[in-house]
Length: 220
Image (cartoon, rainbow, N blue to C red; front, side, top):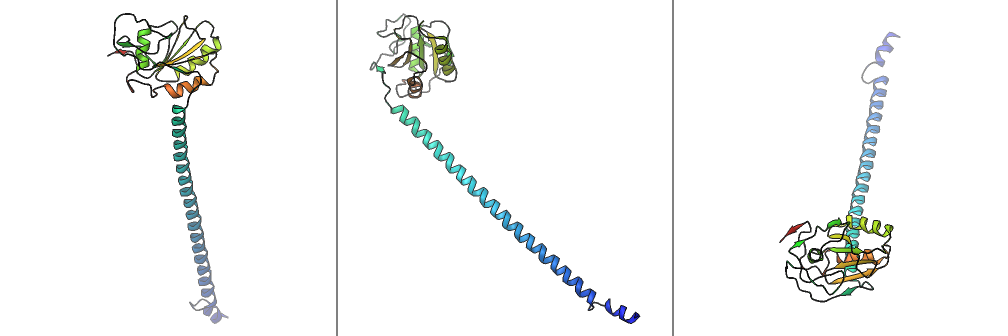
């Protein structure tokens, strides 16, 4: 009995063989887990790369589409818009008798109005507003027929739009008039879709005489 027990503990015995087999099985299982984890990591990395590529491609396509939309809007005709051809651009100190109301160009004061989304609650000087138009601003004017809702909608639009300004203009013919350099549109309501179209096309649009010029209050 004693000799049999000693025999089983030798390296070549049954217990030693079982132990080596168990170790081999554990190592094999560990290697399988490692391979499985590597496959999962590779698949996850591939998904992330594909997602990043797809996202980047979508962003580029989206930006390109927005650029095309802006270009199309800039070239699209807006029904009812009037243009007045080439207008003088001299700086003067005296009042100017403009041929259109409100004025959209011509000689003007050397000092322009703040037009970085500024809303004036009183009428402004024509000669200074015209200078702002020269810098590419859109000037929104309105008379007593404009409703409080119109005024609120237009004010919000102007405040959110650099290179725009707004002021009451009691003597104008239309309820609401949108003015850019040598360009004018009269509408009856702020809900008219042409309001947004006018802003898109004429804020720093092709009609701008001095693109990028300052629109904060100043003097040349």
